[in-house]
Length: 256
Length: 371
Image (cartoon, rainbow over all chains, first blue to last red; front, side):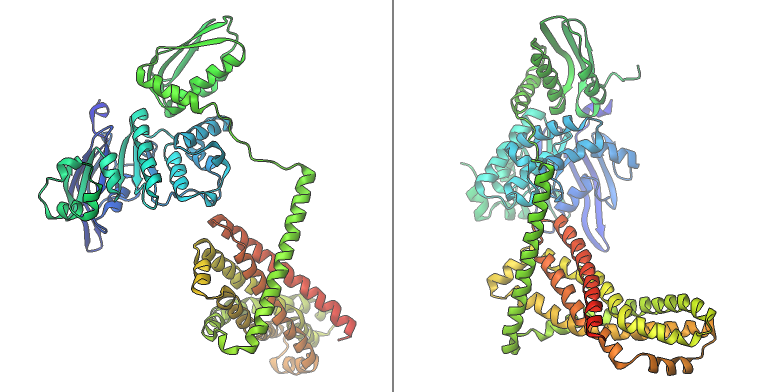
């Protein structure tokens, strides 16, 4: 069984082109099961594009992506559907359905993909909402009534609804105050511990990088130029890495 | 049994429940229904044996806890056994969170519902009248300070709501004229009164159909756009930004629309009158063999300037209804994309309704006045 031993995600020779613009060229990246991998890079380095390719929203121009050992580039719809159910995605701005309450939002994937009764779905959705650190009375609120931090938590609860093995986070702490951002980092660590999640996160938050990420992949020059834990990454002598981690803000975030 | 080894399995006898397999969300479809059938257990002490569970997630843990809670509510004692350390940790956590009841949305009783909608309706009427008053007040102030009127916006709006609507208004009025003439032709021919087709088309188009048809098209086309535009600006906080910069959203968004549509709608109405009559005239020739020249001669006699002005004078009133309702609904949008959709629908329904009501009022007033 290749399924049991293969890494969570394996990207090989990814090329992405928009017209004549080349975004990725021969990009390789492996994400092991149970790790938190952070994806960093300057604006326009193709982080979000790469994330969209991993969550099957877009196909790379060429290359191969294997999710739990199964090829998803050019795969049939059934394969994509099956793999999608193993992924949860937290979008940068939450992307909650504005016409539904938080409880209904979290229930959407469950209603769509399970045959559970409405009562059971509501109970599971409420569990997820609490798991994401929201009070139970937030369940009946609409997204427009929530603060930024609560929207992120509600969106995380929805991403977790089907107990995914792979969780993708697009800038999970962007736009949060430092206290909420720190609490969100804590939450991620706890969820990872309980559920054995594999997490891929795009982030600019240096505190998150130090605290949550097991490894950090630096995207520059159209490929991944380095993948390493933060402490090792600081030693790497590459101009793009240096530029990213040697700024005054980066030094301030570094733990002693 | 077709259940594969991978699925979750639950079996029970008098005092022991066996859980096996993968207790994860994708494999629990069977168990979720079977778990409610676990009945008829004799013992008071029940052992929930989960030692053969190979995978557990939040959903699986919750189903275990749900079963346990139900058995306990029947007065039995339940002992969960055999969960590995990691699973026990997750189970414990889920059991704690699961103590909270699913909150229920407050539902109003029937009588309270009637009261609630009555109050909401009155409240909306009140805000609409306040909005109407505020717009009129602002118009009065601007009449004294005409240099503060945003003429550039007015011209842009005039183009968007007037010029670009010519095609659809012209085409629908033409078709309307054809339809009326066709219906009339059949009747008039039996009486040998074919020439009166000019009276029929001329009067219906100028007095009633021209103004009303145009107003309905514009309400659907432009009124909805006003609501969606202002509503989206409210959701994205553009209205708030305008206020902080010191621009009155009324000056920027409402007044130019009001002034431009009060010009555009009467002009569109005239255009509608003409294309409708042309449509009728062409059909009269095709169906009744009535030439253009006798048709136009008769039209001049049948449609007096007064008839034309009666229809024409309704247009500015319809324009005000469309702009006021459209903008008012836009400002009432709260928070989300769904709200924009709801208020846009309400805007179109209400403005068409009010246009038809106003048209009926006009008929009553004109008949009192004897014109």
